[in-house]
Image (tube, rainbow, N blue to C red; front, side):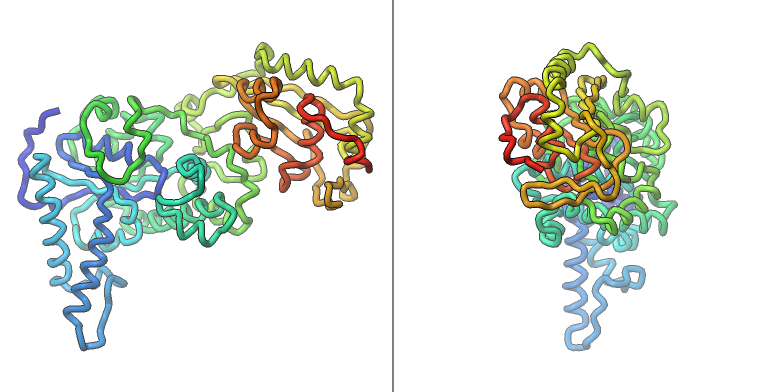
Length: 460
């Protein structure tokens, strides 16, 4: 896409993307970088450089005076300090624009949300794109990007403060980032344009057109398709997946449904929900993990939202694995009293099995025989003699997985606990949500013939 726009010596109306990690900023960078008016490099951490320059200026100018303001009050920075920092950034980005032969630069550094007020003072004509994504999808993306231990992407200090709970670590990171961006957006509404990741990937052309209009740039129809054909610099931080992507898809919307909501401490969840509400997102409640498949986290959910997440569809009774599951369960149904002798707390309880496949899902239920006393005195026992359970209405547990996972389990090629821990099989345990190896999971393994459990281990 040739550029015929004049390249000025200094760009005084740059664009800053304010966002947190795992929110689609690299895709947004590709789109802007494809436009003939914008050059958007990999993450430069230019905001951190500005802060360091101001500290250096402050120390040198006030050496011996005992007066140090640093950047605590950007609006009151001396003109000389602003000039020093501007001159450095203008020179750096001026050289970059000259090489790219473009008139405006755009920066998507992940540290910009720490000091947006400083950027607003340095560049009074700058515009800000505030990019958001639902917290639970960010958590799912962060864990997917760091399967051997959550790190990088700004997560490290939060992991250190939340040992053993990556969900809370990334959730706290998201809350801090998002609240900071929202506060700036509310203070500078005329200079900020809000983009939600879900809108960007489900309606890319419309979202990009609105953003470009806000930035005062000419529309470029098809830019969200062309952005994958235009070369972009790759020698810097960014999302690695996009280099192996050829089109914008909404496949990642709603993946946070598998993130266990119970892992969020109550005060953090309340803070997250308050922020989600401000952005028009679905909040995280006790039913968060109940859906068979991904759901669109936006509220209200319009027609585009329904299409983006994929239709849940009617119960699909023709799924082959569903029939195989039913066969296993029916074979065990004749020995229901044996199950109750092992797990008396499950008497009269219902287990729900859900098989997902390409937007469809099928389900079947099995109820243990007997009439259990399912009130506050209902305490099951584990192998440590503990009982910490709650009263349940409806199915006591729901097991959700794709056809391939269920088939691997039935064939003996997979282990039930491994599949649960990996997230490939989602266990929604409404009676005993805090343990993986609960009575319900043992009973399900027995019901499907996935394990031979000695009766003596489960004597009441």
